[in-house]
Image (cartoon, rainbow, N blue to C red; front, side, top):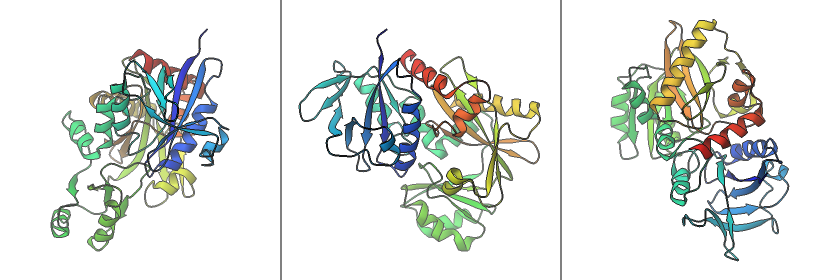
Length: 347
């Protein structure tokens, strides 16, 4: 049987470059070598694309960019090429499907997906439109709220807004507040503030990562998540729960779990977990998701469910939340990867 040629992309011009390297290493190692011919494509922090032909372990260590192991490439926008072009020789390498394992800006926000669509190359994950919508926290909240689901109370600002105006708007909200870049992942640039005195520093931090930010009220509850897999016939993993000792689930806690814990399944009655799953599926459909995504919500003390965000390319190591939730219902990481490739080709 002819192997499927999969272009696995990693790195990226994003604050989540390092996270991508870890995820991609795990995805590549868990791809069935008998079914797939893997073409490794690294993207530097500067945004340059390279074909990588070296040791997979060097990706995670950020040692992949080495002389003799990389060749500069471009993704051809000519549909007849259906793949990548080696810059030095002009040789075309055809790709059956792209598997982007990039998080955040320039990987998860629809830009790369739009390039694949122009090139006519199938790819894994949400399409350009849903990727862009899910990355925009405010727009995603507005769409979900318009379908009768709960979202945090928030305000949207850009860099042209005066600090005085931001302060005036924020005074109408209830503390504590979260100050977030509009389009960033892995909790980069997010600050939880308890008073107006902390606002200015938090605003400056958020604007380091994006030219727009969202300031939203804290939801008194804990975070739960659902892994959703599919285009039309959807599969949903078991619900997980994040237990925090203090603060919020920031970048350090997500990858170290020093003062937090993830409970799988969530410590809730089955009927409550089923209710969470039902709402996660509704959000997935409202936002036009396909392929896969992790839907994050808050579960409050009065048993209400409030939408937080959707990760259209969630962490993809074998122990990350997304594959762990599917493992809980009997799907191995390798089988999840197989299904994602099938779904991309099907679309």
